[in-house]
Length: 132
Image 1 (cartoon, rainbow, N blue to C red):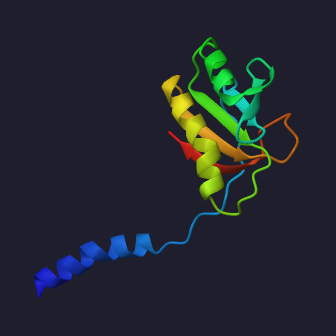
Image 2: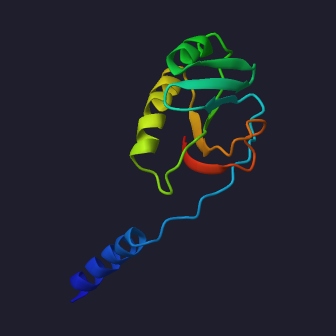
């Protein structure tokens, strides 16, 4: 009887946490003034907003240029024209290259935000995903 009780006590927290509803999306607040902030305009082009503004480029060329930037810990990618209500194939297709490229450059904290058409400031934009 004690074994069944112990087993149930061990399984119950796992069961309850697996049934939890998803957390509401949070607004982003930048705490790293040296963060690389990129506005991804579509699946193939982007522009850097900070630390040094770079005009519209192809994603791959921008990542090559980012190698010359001084190393930072945080990269923020604003996905403009992003239309999914929940993360799905569009997110995967647009974020995977960024994630791999930025990790390869040494960025440890990568944040993906949903753009709103106003590229001036990422603060307050909805956080789609955050990787530490």
